[in-house]
Length: 174
Length: 462
Image (cartoon, rainbow over all chains, first blue to last red; front, side, top):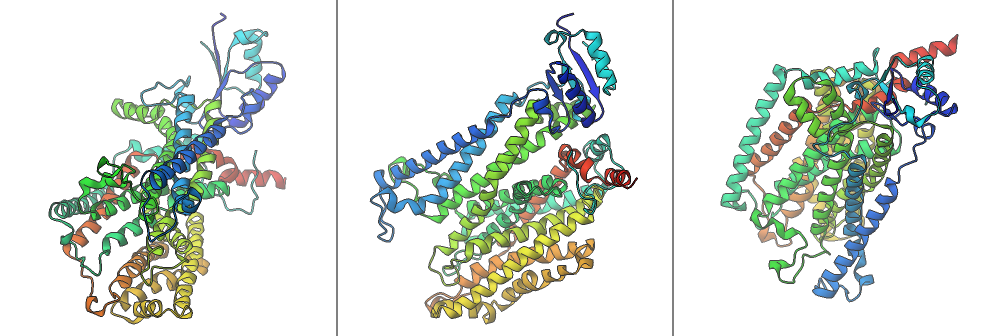
């Protein structure tokens, strides 16, 4: 019995949120929630930490900025300085105004694509990967809570009746 | 839950449930295409093929098949390039800037506006490509040492900035759009029953599961990408304008260009969104989602940006006289009264005078009139770029090189071709992709849906 999983289906996001609050107040650990759209406020209730994706984005952006500035410094000042209307380009600070547009674009380019790749890898969503939602209707109009009885001390029967009384429309153990 | 003031008009009309939204958006995807779709697709495909033929002829024979001459070295090609890039500004503006400002009305229109953006930027990129003459050397724009020796591309040139700006804008917009599409593809994947569509949509949906952590990351990446895309939108057309503004041609050498080009771009982009969505909501029965209110909001954006463009035109005119630069004042006088006076006044009428009628609420909530106006604005904005490019060039410093520009059939064919390819892509999008961000719409159903608003009003009154 220990490796069985309980899936409780709800037909409203607010009912699921209220139910999750009641259950976690009793000390029940909810593994995950599947929903067709983000349920605002569910993350702290079921103990999901806020993602650090934005920090990654910032780091990727810094890498982009560094690459762009150092690349242009090497191409235009070290390797092959060009005389363009006699404008001074002996040092980076003299030439930097003309480098600002590309530095900005490259920062955004790396930040955006780096974040997108991280997003795909961390979610493990890539072409060809099989979806892991328990029922197809969780991407349409139903909301499903996943509870592992092995995580919890209270009995499966009590869990089931608690879910039922807080508004779940269907509970399945598999 | 977020409560919205009762005075705000609902954004989703009718009695809708979460399941109903899925049904409504899926209906064109699972159903068969109707006759009007096939007619539109046929016409666009013919235009596209004609254009591709002209482009191949151009590439095979040379840029001399266009009407360019030694005085007017940029004409329809760069006009069309700037026109398409401008149209490509509405999509990311709607989905990024309006997301940051928490404008919920963006949700019904952002998906198709972004698709329009991506296709328009693709069409824009065609022009500098074929204008190069020897397109097989197009890789020269990348920072490779020249001839693989040691001379690099010129990083001080706005033309190279443009390469970076357009490619960054295109790829970031594409990623932003696709990440938003993934959960909706997953909805279709879980809903369709036929084998082949199910396979295709599972591939497209990347195995999206919709668990709580994935949604947490999804919301974060949408917000940060919106934050990154916002300055990007403004930078792209600013850099396009620098292609002109950093030169010394009278009529181009103007510091007002970046903001003036950006507002012009938003202006023309919204006009194109109106053109496409007014047809789409009718053909695909999306009147409950793309409401009159949405159309009115977009018309308000059109009037604001159109007025900014008008102020920019007048400022330019005033400064050309006030600067006391002989060549500059001649360039502007010549625009309005010279041989190309008709294009100048077409631009002025279409862009400055006619959008002002949207001050009347009756007109900006009238669908047929909005559609008509959107076409007028598209024409006007094409003429704006034509005026800036051709009328500034056709009067050289030496009167002996004064000339006119006459487009050849290849010029016209290439332009019509890009319009055809654009519509082919957009029609395919409308047929096979979820045209509304259905999962995002579900998040505002309870706060902005008509039925829910009515219910909560009734509840507060009793």
